[in-house]
Image (cartoon, rainbow, N blue to C red):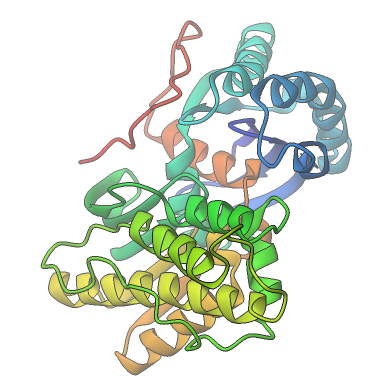
Length: 343
């Protein structure tokens, strides 16, 4: 079975993974190394592109060397090199993509360009191998997508966000509430002590016939609530903070779950897959477990280590491209707005 070395550098995580695998069989993750920049960007309340790309350059070579050592293979034993080509920050994508193409050129091996969203989409199946027809929800910092999946490479978009992605809404509301970046884990932790019914926040587009999402109205509702309770400053009272977080979080979860289950029912999909950074949220995962069990559907969750940005998911998607002969020329550029290939 071929070996792939994959690089992920779409935003603020530098990641390298080495996998062995073939379609229909669980992939063997021989190494998965990640250098996080969360502490660096927290001081700025979000990702600073220049700092992100600079640190990708600092971390990438040591991560590649560590991954090769952990996997116990030499660089010339790698059969194919892959990297995220988009979507993401242009200056960050360039670092990983250029490095992977350089390694491919130096060793005379093929290169595969992988869509970051496809990495998330296929991440629940890394240790399963077989990718059955299913309804997938990819919910991350920049994306909220519902996809009907017939198999690897065969995707049909059912719904997406019309404004803020769920992860963006978490980050923006956290900032309103005075919580540090990244907002998702902070809201989840604070919400644990709160009442999810304390504030009646809207469930946008829940009754509309389509499967699109909108979270900007929910974000605005939180802002108005803060202003109503503190007209001068719009600052949350410490006693309100857990309830605000719990109520906001529940509103997001309710919409994601209801739309996903309705789409699965309409399309006749008996399997639901959940992936992306926001899918680490325990309340969301438990709601999907209960909802799928109640509706008689199988739920497949990405492992926690595969939910946030990582190179193992990029390598898994890259292996499928490799076996289909979908290699990319070495002059293939990155695309910050790269859409997921549908069909």
